[in-house]
Length: 251
Image 1 (cartoon, one colour):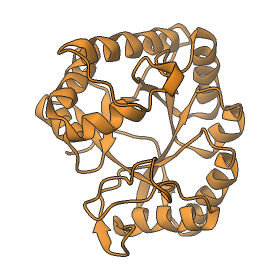
Image 2 (tube, rainbow, N blue to C red):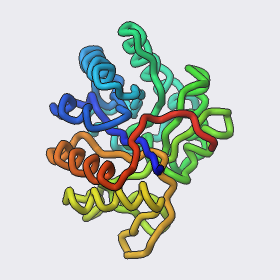
Image 3 (spheres, one colour):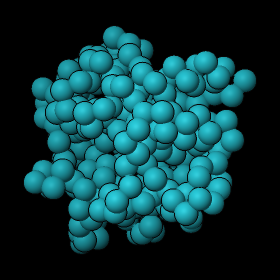
């Protein structure tokens, strides 16, 4: 049986975490960098525990004005430091409620930069490993980030996106370009289903691209997120695909 994790970025203030949490298997919770605070972390951790959803940290650039989506050039060591403090904050919040973190997935600009920049990827991976070597590092499929995680001994998950357009090289089309976000629930569900079944996606130029998909992401900050989540989960289940949380796998 084909199985896949279904994750969503939550605790970012979008207002529909309670509706999304029952639909997913892993939650990436903002931990005070690009969004979130002690209250939102606590609420998201409690919701995840209620629904049996794996809890993950979602650290990002500490640039709330741009929602952490701008890539920042930080001095060496600063990425390590920000990932460490943000993951620690969520880990402590989870521990206080009898829960523990399962994974770490960077957010926005940090995610995209770590996908391309080996030095940034290594700082992220080292921070995660030093926090807890049992954590799973989630990164863009085939990119520098899962490679850095493997190099330092972490379990990794290669991530694919149901609601993002892909370039022919397997990278994501930048959000600044038209068509970067898939705005139709049926189209997003169809892409997610193909990724889960065939580990492939159709790029923006129409070519088929191989994409490893250990975990499938749905963005939680759009107004259509709940409708997309319901449609995608229903289609995956109807196709006989097992949805289960992230767990350590061979890299």
